[in-house]
Length: 95
Image (cartoon, rainbow, N blue to C red; front, side, top):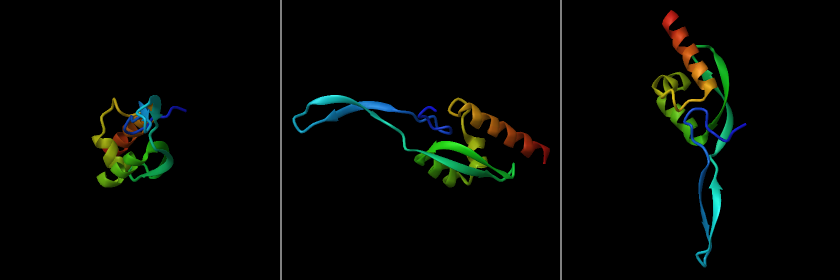
């Protein structure tokens, strides 16, 4: 399981630990990933995803998973999120 957000594509970044004496050693900054189940109103079921805390706030701000995926760029989404996005679009078109 990769350390990458399924909705935003946010992954590990690298930087330096800097001591008081200004000694620099390399380190990794990992995203704050959480396993959550997001409810899709169009599909009428929950979808399990591993997303960052910032993405969870963005989903809430945009009004739910369906609205977030409608505005999201395809190149940022994971393959499973793309499948969900297409399923939501298909279900919305048939209604």
